[in-house]
Image (tube, rainbow, N blue to C red; front, side):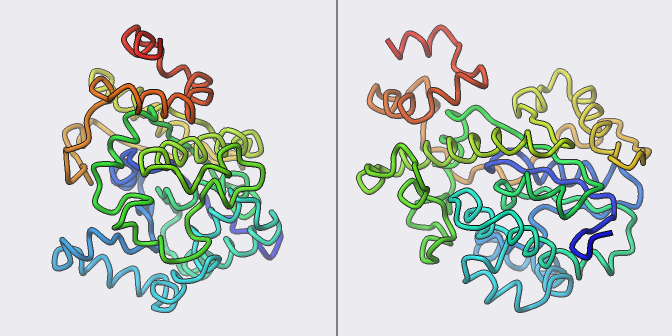
Length: 316
């Protein structure tokens, strides 16, 4: 057994964000006995701090207890002092697999070593760049990447107060903590990054996260991609959630966990966009349609999005 591996059965669900990972975290904890499940386990969400601090204080206190005051404060200020920065470094080609594996091990080992629960689950957009690293540190794990239609993702992100590249982006002051085309070696949009609007940067963000995930999923034999739109089809709620749980509870070492879910969370909603000012793609001006298609069109087509006749007409 490697000194840099964690053998506990672990579940990882990641995405580019805006894909209901909080819901999935709640689902896993409800359905799987003796499972510790959390969304972004060592992250302070700025909206929760500023807007709902009193309500969320018990959660903040627990995170400090579980992951340490240093990790929850000063560790967030350095490029490689947190999973988000590590994920960005992997996406930008700034760190090797071996070094990234050691850092990921250090981020989670102390907490998981003392965890009494038999299973650990983490639903976290902060690890989207670590899909290929996860099995090196957690050999007995299952990973799911949730992909959402980029047009809807850009709209949802644009309607958030603290979205990437916005004036309220909490990590924009920390060099290396947010990937950009300018920092990614060989990126086709690196020379134009400084002239990009926030909309174009969000399009690029979706493209980069999705493209990198697709490339790294093949390096993790116990991972799969699931479409957000399929997973949250209201007419098939119980079937889709059961299928997800069946996959997540069957581990590489042969362990199969029991689970029970009868649709208790069907009407639950978490972290809805706080604004609703950015329109749906059907109401985008032609300029935004052209910009989106230029940046995301090839990746979107690979995933079989954008086949609607109305979208195809707009492209012409």
